[in-house]
Image 1 (cartoon, rainbow, N blue to C red):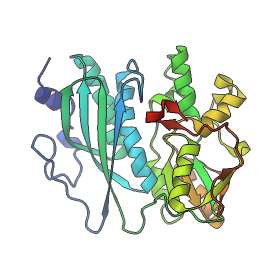
Image 2 (image 1 turned 90 degrees about the vertical axis):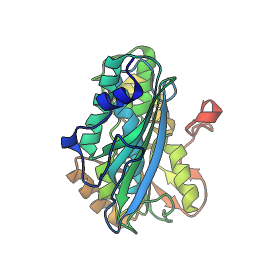
Image 3 (image 1 turned 60 degrees about the vertical axis):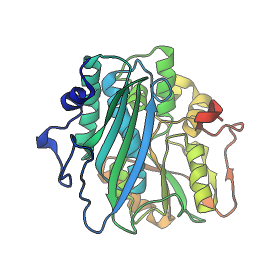
Image 4 (image 1 turned 90 degrees about the horizontal axis):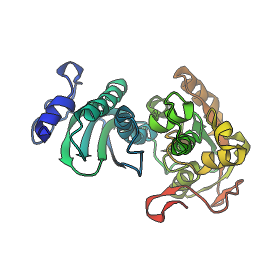
Length: 317
């Protein structure tokens, strides 16, 4: 197998023609040198993706590369931050350079599409795992956070729900048609970066839906010191979800299933039309699914105590 430095040079070093402004020194030295825009706050987040925990080890390498970056970029989207740079730490278990080339293609393609420059990282031998740190910029005072939801706000979600859980269920049943809309949503989620930017100065609070709607809603409510009432019949279900899982399981996937990477936002009712208009200009939808209340807790749903994905409790809890 080639050395780690050869692999980095061959597969994980962006072409010079794709380099973005703000990178005085990129891949190849002990550190990258970055130049944030004056007067901007730096938003930073990290996610680790582990084979057969966060994605199937036998999934297409290109999808694994895309997914590893997408789940981190989703955190920037939830903050209303503009992506700028990323770092990647990659552990590989074998010397399959064809796999690595396809993985890198998926990763670099999303870098290019999102305006994110890969500026450094590490490659080592081990069980397949990918750690991605993303960095973005946001104008001071305009960052979306979890802590701003207010009594009377509308709760709304971008896109549709349950697709990640539905895609995983199909994969576990042996479905391998990567054009299936549920598999595509699970294996190649699209971080809602444009939505996060459009919702700045409109939403009071936001969070990305990674562990399931209910689990992430509870994080937002706890940070804001409020409660909520949901309207389950209003949930926008992913295409093909009911057909794949049945109606009851589809709604459970929408409420508790992870890996949707949509945005959940809290905003004043009088701003809802403007928010919908802005997202429509980006080809996205925003669907009201409930309201924020002063009384703690979540009302309007009964899912038997399940909430969403938790790594150290054996899955859903």
